[in-house]
Image (cartoon, rainbow, N blue to C red):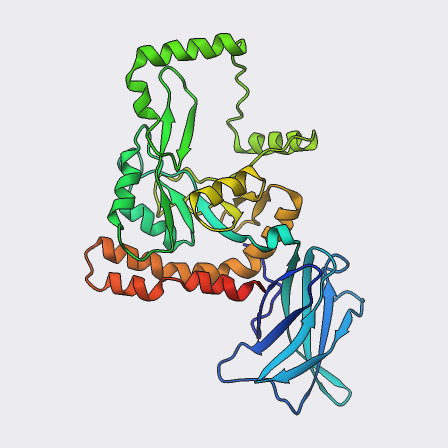
Length: 368
């Protein structure tokens, strides 16, 4: 888990800004029923972290004019490049300065500003193949751990993903759950994942004669096939970075391949898609256009993020500063989904009351 640079003493909105556009920031004490004193003196200091990664370094930062308005400290932040920013707040009493806390922000260019960081997993299993839990239970657990989109991808089976979707048909959900399957071609040890497909690829193998003929035709067309896959996670990552260094543009996703949603792997590996929505076309285009990163988030270890460098930097901020709040909103939604699946008559009303909270959270985070 990444450590936040924001102290627990303060809250601020927005947190993600557009480069080149001055943005009004409103800072409030985190404690309930407290506010800034309009008769007191405060000092607000801005540290662009491209130059500084700690407010303890001997660099004075830049003083920011600020005023107290409706109990909030209001200032304007103008960022001239894409980077993380720190703002510190002090109360001035004579010659003494008392630290009240600090808050981290991030400024992004216009191409990223209209995109929200959505967390998803494109590959997992239920007990319809070799997983442990039923499809609907897996879907609910996905939301409970903070996923915004996911697919169930059982071995050679498309139907379990449809079963999970049908279990919550008509329910007010903010989780986008898509059809999927793990595709195993006959006589081929390599498998692929069908995420969001409109039909089952595995079903196409029922006509074995047609499959064998078409494979032979493709082999003749391409002159054979070079088995270049890397099975080790470490070698896959090393190969990815080596190819990027050679100038190749390679879309990237992270998946868990979890075979149980109450044990390791589940929630440890996932995708952050910087997309305009969780609709399937937006998710697909975000990956294809290189607006995604793969995340290894193993407990008690420092998260490793892979993808375009500017997105990796931004993702570190998102994971440390924004996702904890997002995930806290998702947990009760997933719990209500579990209760709905268990027949709780109150769960549907609870889901309706919870719907839209993550969207409102992102609306406050972004100064759009």
